[in-house]
Length: 288
Image 1 (spheres, helix red, strand yellow):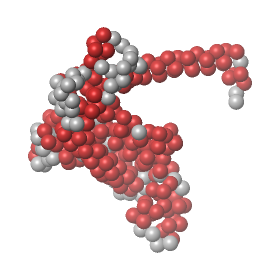
Image 2 (spheres, one colour):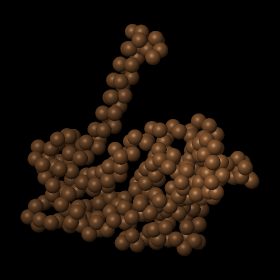
Image 3 (tube, one colour):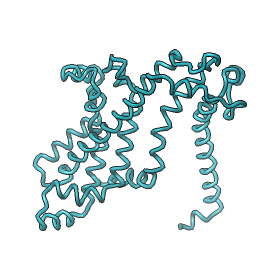
Image 4 (cartoon, one colour):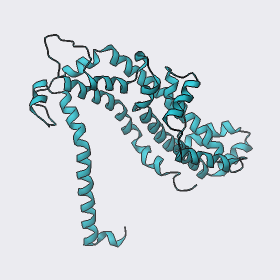
């Protein structure tokens, strides 16, 4: 370690950074903790206390009401299915585009990369995208939530750079053994690409899971709504089933419970992908 980090000024700087980042982290976490605590609180406590993290009396009535609502279960199933299929399709298309663009011998490579960078800086906008989806006959179709954002230009460039940094000798050895381009991609490059693939699979999945505008624009059939649309309906008015008529449901608690249920599933993926996350974000981001 450099001597400058062992000086009194360096140690003070480190302590200051730790304290500052700790405070920022706590401030960012407090709203979510309040939502979690409020989802287990009673209506009386939510009315009486403006802010708390730990409720005085625990109640699972809000969660029971949410899970007893058929609309919620349907929207949860739709969101899980669209996220799984969409992530697979988007990652597959991105990888299939990134691999040939990583080969300098590809004809027209520079032109295609320039077009990708242009698409990253300039987008068509909401109305042209809606007209395109409409003319393709994708309205009221779950494909409208997947195909318009099938490739993220920034993710594509990062994955291309990653493939570009892999030793070319690996491909040459596979070609000598008679492997085709698809075989090289599947058997040689993809096993070495777990960090970058896991990272951007997570990015794609989070984007689809949290997508609100696409269902709002493209889905008019309420039976096809995703979890984000259900969350919108609940925050507007708590239209959920009351499993116990003798118990008054906390309207605010139901909103909090839906927010928690809509957030926790995607958070569960982070611990499993954490070991790939930092490496996957940084790798391939230096060379062009």
